[in-house]
Length: 225
Image (cartoon, rainbow, N blue to C red):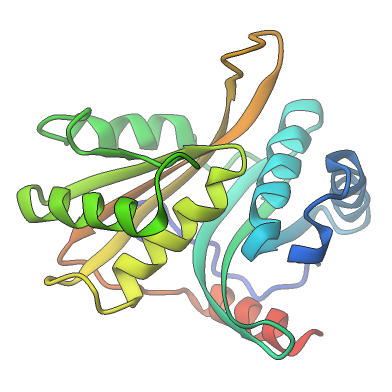
């Protein structure tokens, strides 16, 4: 993924795949699998597919907050899964060494925006997918960069919108993903609790480029191995 150096080693970590059918599972169950994978190999890949994306993101955020677990690589892409067809996915590689600070990288990206508020598309369930896609296209027509943000279950839609803009041939100009930032925010109705959130930075003129490791991982998930 452009913007943050991608992990280039071959995938040897345990792969935890969160499918749409798992969407109602407990976050702590996925966190348990993450901790187990870290203990076994020191690293783990968590892949969320379609409606399973939010659960995967929630588990990754929780694991990084309660244990010595760090986000080393985050990217999104389309998969061709036999049982689901074409599906949106997010992949997060976790390890025990902090290779870079995603918060600082995201802050640097934001500083490069002309008008952060105007260049931000907030995804929520109150707007249709088509409406959000249109708003994103309008912003891209005006600016070189935009940021798609979402929290909670809207993360699923945010990833799908970003992929539609970058690979769906709907954008008039080529658009690529510069950075995917995963974090947590306080809940509005209960500040004592937090929820997973995502910021996806898109920029005109970029193309989707996956590292060898990322490509191998995607094929592995598609094959179900």
